[in-house]
Length: 109
Image (cartoon, rainbow, N blue to C red):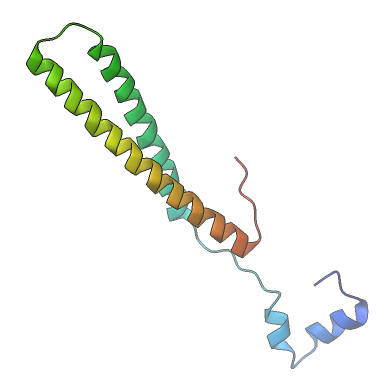
């Protein structure tokens, strides 16, 4: 809007030209819920990765067959959760990117 010439600017803000003026109006959307989901997903992913590392360390120790089966199933379950969380996290990041592009803003970390 401010890149226009003075004359064009006056025409834009003139009475009766509300439609063109409203084209320059940008209002921030509340995207707090997306940010919260993103952070929670990241924290869950970190927790699962930590549990997987602990499980792998535990798998290296000697165990009975029953304990070994439980550890193997636990590891498989954690791996599936990690994959699902990574997909969810990517989806949230895509939503976040779409919103920032729509608003014309950039999220800095």
